[in-house]
Length: 366
Image 1: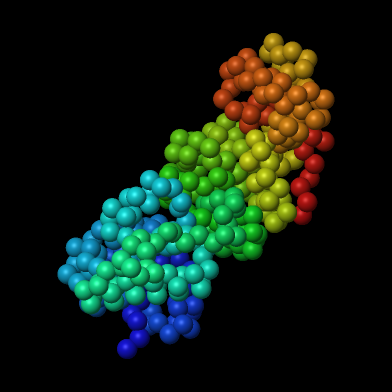
Image 2 (image 1 turned 30 degrees about the vertical axis):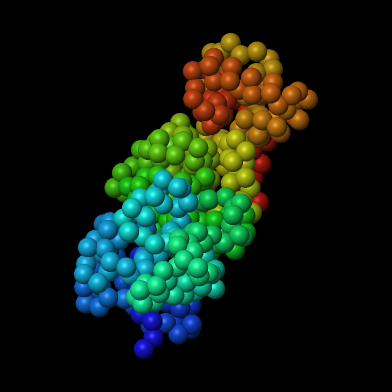
């Protein structure tokens, strides 16, 4: 009788991929898409191994795991989490709930199969009254994480439109320097997942419900202060440009900007501390009045003029022929004098007062 695997994965495309890979190996694979269905399936038949997605609507994987362990016959069944999160504190919660292992997405099919087989060998040893001592089976297994993604930038995609999420995922999935750790379809999910997945960059569409995207940006920044949010919006969203940037976004792109080259360049710029603005978004901000309501020095104004270009401190230092440490001091002084909180807000301030020109933001490559 083939090994019975239960796969609990709310992403249908991911579930199909896992089923295809494991069926080809010879496993009997049952797929369900939420925690309630998983508990029902386990009550009907105890599987040999459970592959359980952590981030699911209604009931997440950690709660599902906790309830599974309360079902008779599931006390020692291997439960392997499929997850995009890599924080020790989150993994500790999973192990406390009863998980045996973590496999970090995106994973290699061969590694996943080997991991399943290792747990099956351990289960067989336990069933026969043996222990793992003196064998080649470690008492615990280190989480699997593909080496190709060890240094990759962790990116999360937030959009109410499934096609847009899929399109962005397809663009970034084949890029070895980027690891898409999760998707969210609304603001509530975006905030919840940010705390779990700890993304470095979040690509967020403004048109979402139930909570406003502006509030989502603020809450995401509170949950993960180091995360850089790049807003992707349609041209008619121009009224939201300033609000999004002031809420904490580091970039504002139009929907037409989402070529692979533009996205990768934008991700790199915000990670370096830069600000990314589409030229038309920059021109919208420039419609504000030019008022000399500041006491910035000439050198500080030089720095201010370069911030809307999305330049890092190092790049600004090279441009102005000064030290990187001096640039950091100027930026700190600028924030204090203008009573602003971020480089992005300084960029907005500069555009509104005509301190940055249209040429400072060339059209992105399409």
